[in-house]
Image (cartoon, rainbow, N blue to C red; front, side):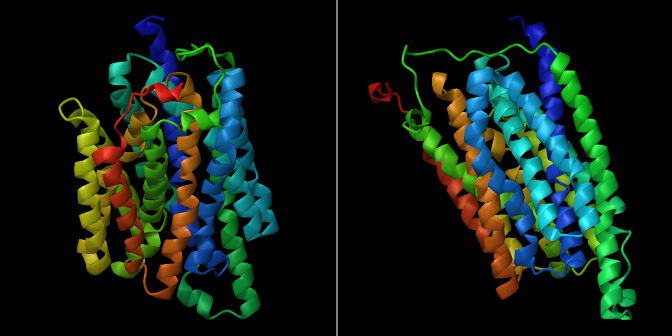
Length: 416
């Protein structure tokens, strides 16, 4: 396969990073919106993340089996179809005014995203020379950062600003309040209808697109299973690091609007702007700058430096207030930006025939995004959302250890 023949497939694969980044970064807008509409606690509202990320745990292995049997292209198309289906289900969810229906629609979207990410991450990594795999994956993930900038800004203006004020709400009777809040929940129908339609168009393009199927080299004639992949020490470390990293990212990003309104005393729409123009742009520029720095600094060394800075900034987010607190969290977004693709590419390095199963295991570890945000939500309800930042702080410590020692590949005949 020539270098030029990889270009258009790489462009289309990269477009997927933007699309799943966009829908993921609508979740921080959904959380305060549904929290208000259904009068939820912070812990209950964090179930939005749980519904999304539990799918990664349940679907990662089936996704790996799909690609092992049918290839990357089939996985991508199937993932896009589930993505679109879940988006369309927001319409009946809004019509029934049931929080559980919203969680179900988000779960189906996430099942599609699990398959897409299981396919697209290794595909972007393998679609070219091995020595530039980490650079290539970080480049594709930069479009995920662009989506992180645009989604909150667009989503806030479509979803959040249509609600009535708290002052107006307080003057209504209980039944009138319930009707008004239920009507607010319906504002999600249009954005998810548009999103689902776009995803269907992309799925059709992929059906007719000729994608090169990447073949990993077979090191033996044996058939190997998922348990064999776990014999790779650096993969096991990557699974743990990704679990805690994703948990930290979801805590920081998804609960930012709630954090900003409490720590800095700003409105939800202002917080959404900080999330987009601040967090999103910081995440995007951090990814771009980090990708460029990897030409001069080893990926694992940069991961260590960024992890240390994230630990320091998490502590600042716990014990400061106002603008200092806001910019501490925005700083976290900048420095955590390279972590997912770097952990992923270091984790699947030199796996050979175990690459697809290894990819599934790392994607499976994204379940950290389902487990850790409720822990932060519980602390937030019990004490404060600022003290809840102890959760991402601990997570970044785990990533730090992966960067120091866990990423190292150990060559041994015992892996046969």
